[in-house]
Structures are given as structure tokens and as C-alpha cells.
Length: 198
Image (cartoon, rainbow, N blue to C red; front, side):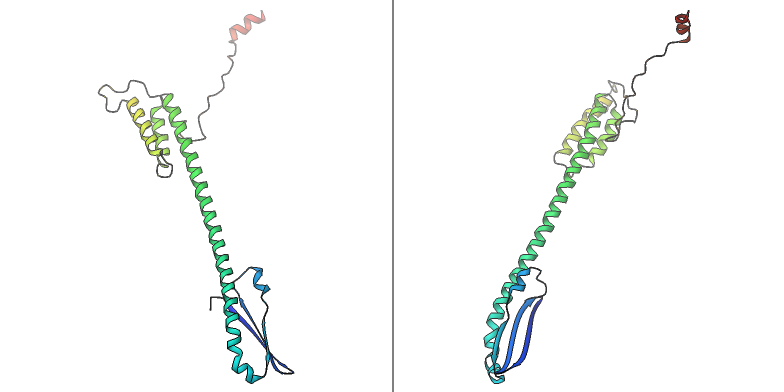
């Protein structure tokens, strides 16, 4: 018998002797189909029940238990599929988030490189490097830009950097790019305003 298998046995006195009903079930099955099973009903004397009861009920009970076991297996498979689907969705969401983070770090690293903020670019590349194991092809992109930045800083050169590093430490996190302050209109000097009044 499978796990959760139940057998409801009802015995009642009848005119001909005994009325026995046997209803197989499974307490672990959630599907409403388990409620569609009808009991096996037998009538006879006590002696007849002793002689043929087990032979009569064993095969139908085995069939019913097989069906209930199949239903339970199906429910378990559905549950496993649902868990697997949720895990796959979670993995996809995490991969998407990692890709977005990587893209954010690389975008500001490239921006800093273009603006000659080489040390800031290296800081951003360190942030992007954290995603090298989760984002396909990211390690080579980080290494390629890192080599360009180091060359611009003059690493390995006898003569130093060809371009001055303009790093200010302001644009070193994704989403927090330093925004240029809006240009203010120059206010006229006091001498100019006096001349205008005259």
C-alpha cells in the first residue's frame, strides 16, 4: 500500500446476515477525483464473508489504490514543476538585475574615461567586476576598458600619463551620476547698474 492509503470498512447487520462496504482512499490526495470512488458493497452470511471476502475486495482495492497513487504522483509532479518554474523565474530575475547593474557600472566607467577621469573609471570598473561571474562576457569588457584606462594613466610608460587625470570622485556609482549644475546668468556688476540708472 502506498503512503497515505486508507480503507474505510463499514459492517452492518442485514436481513441476509451482513452488509459490508469497503471504500479505498488516500489522505494525501488533494484532487476532488478521490471523492468519485464508490464503495465495494458485499452482502452475505458471516461464513460467506469468511470464505470469499478478501478474494472479492483485494483486486478492486488494488486498482483503486493504483489510481489514487497515480493522482498523488501527478500532484507531486505539478508541485515540483511549480517550484522549478518559480526558481527559474527567480534566477532569470537575478540575472537580469545583475546585467542591469553591470551595464550601469560600465556606462559610468566609459563616461569617466571619456571625460579623462581615469581613477574614477577604475573605481567603476571595480564595481562592474563584481558581476564578472554572473554576466556572460563581462570580464573581458572590464579587462579591455581597464587596460585602456591604465594606458591613459601612463602605467608601464617611462614618461607617465599623456593626459592629466581629472577625477573628482563624484561620478562613481550607477544612478548617481554627477549632474552638471545649470549655468547661471551673470549678474551685472554694481558699476554697470549705476551707469544704467544715470
